[in-house]
Length: 91
Image (cartoon, rainbow, N blue to C red):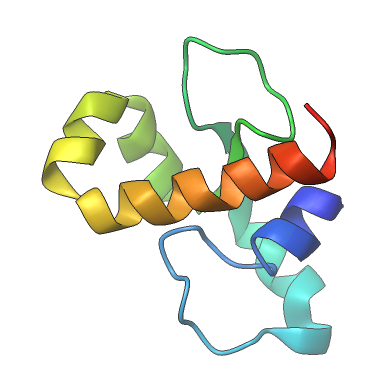
């Protein structure tokens, strides 16, 4: 619940500027899934991102290095959100 609502605001990590989903969040999260940001690390609050199903499949097929190289802004934004989670949970 915390990850979907507080970290990703009920929307895909790839849609950070989408309109606030508000009360419709639970309908919109039906199309989303939690995915490990870094496949080499276990699932934890500081290693899970919310993505649409198709985005999740794409994410699973590339490395973090590829994302960092090709999509530096997205990489930095996600890393920042996950660091915030790490601090809030004292990890």
